[in-house]
Image (cartoon, rainbow, N blue to C red):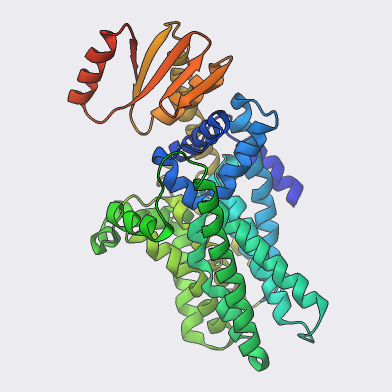
Length: 459
């Protein structure tokens, strides 16, 4: 199963940077690698939310990886860790259900557009999910030890802490899913108090550790940086919570597009059926909602939502859907498998339009191919601009295009020396990066630099 998963995802793996956020992460890592000290600028946000991922990319560049090879590293990492995430989720689901339930849940989850895209191009989302599932798995195993006073308890709790630290360092919003640790501790019954204490130790330790980790990296910057509290306050100022975002069809529609319309309906029906039926099914439904609701609601209340933001929250809901499928088929495995395959097939063709990574369609091969063509066109255009032979150049682009263009310019440089985040020297060639904040300012920038002998390059 793992080999087949890697083979399929490798076949549709993108060859370039899959979206602008991936390009921004790659550019930040290159800037950090070239400048040695950390220039913040707009990367402050990503250093707070994906410090571990950025650090690993920079580590690879520091140890011989060519800049042009960064997309390949990012994309292959997602292919391999995507399969590892599926295996980790299966092992985690096995703690609550029989193997057949776990297998059906993971299979259907792998058929969702959000998870699929996370496997074919490099972003920290899927690696973080893998680490989070391992952390929860280790903690649950700790709650089931026959004796609390054992070396295994220490090993499992520390392992859970390390995995959660890694997960949050890759994607900070995974903190929103940590309520599942509290629920796992409460389910321990006769040892709830010590397990709640250990759950608090794991969660708070990972959160505090990541806060200190990011802060220690930010102190490398020659520019001022804000505290974690100020960063969260600034976040709420720039990306405020608004009820209108939840009611906006395009914004909240990305929740549906993360899994596709058909499977989303199956998830809703399965949750309602489990909550009404009671018993063990209700407990599993409540446990999955503790994990799922906070991250989905967090991004649904903010404009700028996309399918990738909902990947974390959707994962556990498929365990409830799996139980629902087996109940519909009277627990008969062959019937359940047939129904699962029918659902997967219908889901695949339920929304064949491709709208990029924000609200992808359900035809997985089609959306991967379309995204590859779109990103390769951007890369080709960026390489053409980067090949401009002018000895003095000013580069201007939109917030979507400039990360790709910056990356291709860094890749083409033979002896890059980054004076600061906006000025690159390559031998006698000087390249300046300017913000494209508006037509009037762009025209003024063009006049000013052309008067100084610079070629003005724009998308």
